[in-house]
Image (cartoon, rainbow, N blue to C red; front, side, top):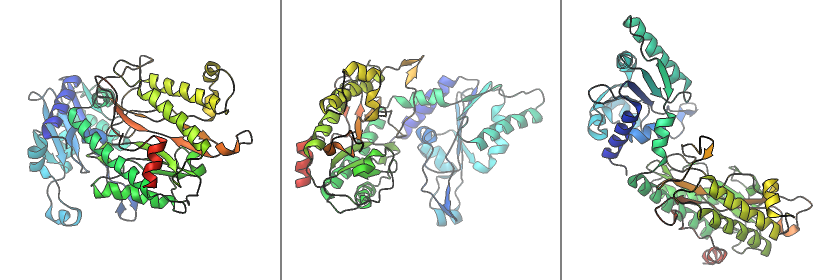
Length: 433
């Protein structure tokens, strides 16, 4: 669990980078109705969570670097015994100061009255521009009110997106963040191992999803995203989430799933035979993807371009497609013409953190950014072989993806999700047991 002192350090660093003539505003995520008066499970905005650790709606964090050496104010819901009887405990104003370490806290209902005054003397306001049009409008209204109340005071001349400053900060993970991600990875790995052990022909995809969710929930973790549990040809749909079809003997099952711990996500993919034994063609295709992943992981090192591991995976997959007889020609030419994209149409990974597809630029000045220590990426090559007439029968409707979460270290890449078997023999041995 992230400690209060780390949240304070994050806020101080952000204020330093914004400069003393700035005001930083970060709103909490709103609640969303599912239907009637029932809400979707609440998930805090990742930027707000990163800076506060608070998982309550109806809150705004305001930071004024030029006031009193850097003032941090939280607007949030006050304690209300009547509402808390229905909805559960609230942090409240005193709790915000004591537990979160902000300088002051005010009721969220006072936001419109206080905020224009905080803008006074500021040259620019940083906030998540474009994420919530209603909040964008409130910022403009506060500036307008300041000008009306104090003639001659123009208020902030610039409204600047918070993304660049904050998202660059989020990209490199701290020691405590890595620990949270390791915990999420362990639990997610246990869930997929459980699914492998339970899988049998005739089961439904939904039953396998239930095994995943069971493991998450018993460890107090929500899913980080809607799981993909795709049997047979369903694995050819990259974002398949129906998860409601029967699992056939002889098919493969592709799972792409992960939970989050303290807001930090894991993201794992494994593909394995429903009946516990790969066919010769399934094994051959699987071994190509596995070798592509190994080649890609080897590129996740300090100083290597982010794109390097995708390029390594593409080369090995293309070589493998030629070996399998699914492509013909020279490897370099097939890569240049992108012929491989018939069977592999997505990138090999993404940043991972508070968001499954975490924040941070992949390119700087039109060049692939260089990997740094404690960045965390996913590495997820795959092959998706359809049922066209030119595909040999044994290879038809095979969808394979193998994904792990990899931390950049001073030395060898660290596989956070190595707890799930990847080798053919290990998978078959686990399922046989």
